Image (cartoon, rainbow, N blue to C red):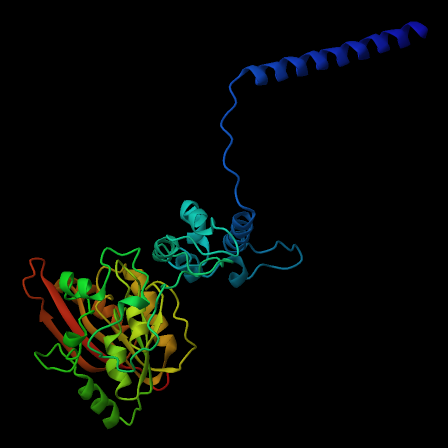
Length: 374
C-alpha cells in the first residue's frame, strides 16, 4: 500500500512538472514573438451606445415563438410580420447604425461638456442618409455663429438672408450670395423664389391660389401642412402668407438648407426621406412632395413613404405630387399603380415630357384627396 501511495505521489509530481514546463514554454514563445500593436481604447460612452443598439437589433431579429409543448403554435406566433422584416432593411431602427461603426465612432468620439467637434454635422448627415436616425445623444455643445445678427426679419421673402447666422466652415460657399451666384437653382435666390408656384406656365403647374380655391370649393380647410424635401422652404413661406402653417423636411446636402428655412421664420425638420414622419396620425391637411421625391427613390421605400403620408393626412386632406419625374414607361407600369393603391380621388393628374431629356423622362403633377373614411 505504501508503494502504491508513493507511485501516485510520483505521478502527481510528474504531471505538475509537465504542466509547469508547458506554461514556461508557452510564455517564452509569447514573449519572443512580436507583440501586435495595441488598439486605441474604445470610449465607454460608445460601448454603451453600441450595446444598446446591439440589444435592439437582437430583440428585432431574434424574436422567435417560445416552444410550449402544451399548446399549439398559431400562425400569428409562428411567423414575424413580413413588413417588419422588410422595413428593418429600409428604415432607421438601429440596424443601420450598427452597419456603420466607423461613422458612429467618429460621431461619438468627443470630449464631454465641451464644444462638439467641427465635423459633427457632416458625420451626422452621413449617418442620417444611411438610415441611422435618430442619432445617439451626446453631452456636448453645438457650435453657433460667433456674431449672429441681433434681429431677424419676419418677411419670409426678404431680399437676402444674413450670413452671420450660419456656421460656414463645412460648406464650399461662405455666403448666401456665393450660393446664389454659383447655384442659382437651389432656392437661395429669394427674389426668384417669390414667383414659384404662383405663375401658370403649363398644365404641370398648380398655383397656390388655385389650390386654395379647390379646397374652398370642397369645403376643406387648409391649416396645417407638411412639405417633403422642401429645400429652402419656399412653399412653406408662401403658405405662411395665406395663414397656413407648413413644416419643411430638408437635408443640408452641401448647403445650409435647414438654416435658410429657419432664417425665413419657418420650421425645418432635419429628416431623410426614409424616416417615419415625426407627426401624429391624421392631423395634417396637406402634404406636398417636392422635387426631392422622384424616381431615384427605391420603389419599396417610396411605397412606405406614401403610406406614411396617408398616416399623417386627415380624411379629406390632400396629397400634392409636384413635378414628380420618372421614365415614361415606369410611370405607367410602376408609379401610377403604386399611387393608385392609396385609393385617393384624382383632383388633378397632369403629365408632360421633361425638356431636353434623352431618357424619355416625364413629369407628373398630381393633386389627390384622401377619402373621408375607408
